[in-house]
Amino acid sequence: MNRKTVILFTFLNVVLTLISWASEKTDQYFYQNAVYHDEIKSVQLYRDGNELSNPVYELGSDAHLVFKFDDLSEDVKNYSYTLIHCDANWNESYIQQSEYIDGFANNPVSDYAMSFNTTVKFVNYQVQIPNENCKPKYSGNYALVVFEDNDRQNLVLIHRFYVVEPLVRIDGLVKRATFDPFNGDNQEVNFKIYNDRLKLLNPGEDIKVVLMQNRRWDNAVSDLKPSFIGENVLQYDYTKKNVFPGGNEFRYFDIRTNRHNGENVGRIEFFRPYYHVTLLPDAVRSNKAYSTYKEMNGNFVIESQDRVTDFNTECDYEFVHFFLPMESQLVGGSVYVFGALTDWNVNKTNEMKWNFEKAGYELTLLLKQGYYNYEYVYVPEGGKKVDSSNLEGTFFITENDYQIFVYYHDQASRYDRLVGFVIVNSAFKN
Image (tube, rainbow, N blue to C red; front, top):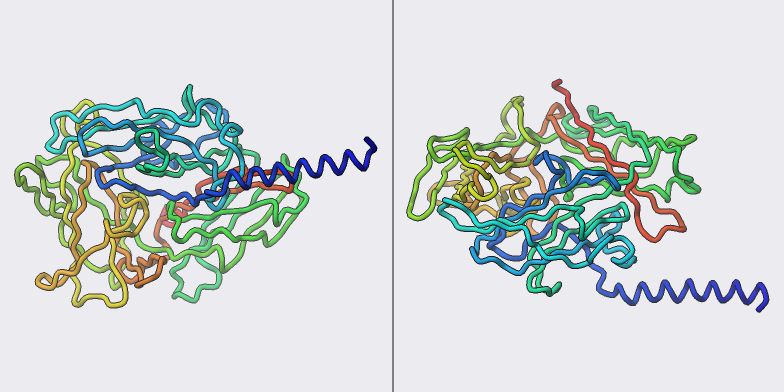
């Protein structure tokens, strides 16, 4: 066999391998946070020890991620989970699970406990990532998929997380937008990526950046290109694409106990067999001055102020009633309660209804005891863009967290590697 034949044979093998991957991935799927059963509540995924942390695991470290959820159907279910590697846009990667998972592809959710001394009965399930049976080997985006009765088509829920191999350094700064057509209320995120460990033949194409505000995917920016390419440094200081509305500080309420009204709680009532919590009436804030206070940038924690041993199984569920009075109903769209308590999604479960008699929007959510942030947002009919400025107002001095994800994919790679992650805080009032 001569040299030309060997080269041709090798090329054909590569082509056949790529065709094989493509044929095996005909069910390629876009993965996003989703719950498919109404009885599944309080889904959380975070770094062990910090309930408010981003679900980012450093490859090869001793740290762990904690994943948990409640099933209000009371009976113990035959739940299993798997991990799906995704590209930077959350489409399933063209690589086999056996490549990126050290262990088993399918694993039972075997860590569960029944609720104790609660009015709403439930089963709390937990998974630790990585564990002895399932450990990610590649960096990148991952979807944790829970399914029932060993049937991957019988989906229960999907939740995103990240595995990073820190190969670049990121320095960022949040400032008032340089050229701001919106009355000076926007925030601009400028940053630099320092790289001395990767060989970038085409930096503008090999590196992909995703910029998020407060973990939101609906307004994430994923098409940034470096404004300057230097020796081992990429600079991103656009004045348009890396600009976000400052928004307002999130609203909050405290339902950590039923013995007295927590912050922003109007009353607590027990209508057998459930507790009902009515929040103080809210108000549109777009016409009000900015007010500074400490909040959690839209997140929540499960906690109790009562004498309990385990928040996971002893924090009760209660119906929480939201009310936003307005002079008239908004036309051409819908109003939603928005935040981590709704998984940063807008759908029928968190869409508010107009009450003609009370002249306002109302919604009832079944929530577990804890401390919650939220805001009201408007979405035009048929649209997907979430707008909070009309109901909440927007200010450039609002405190926000910005997440910067850096992905690397050169011509030889078959998947998007997550090589950098950092959180940059606006901190204008610090």
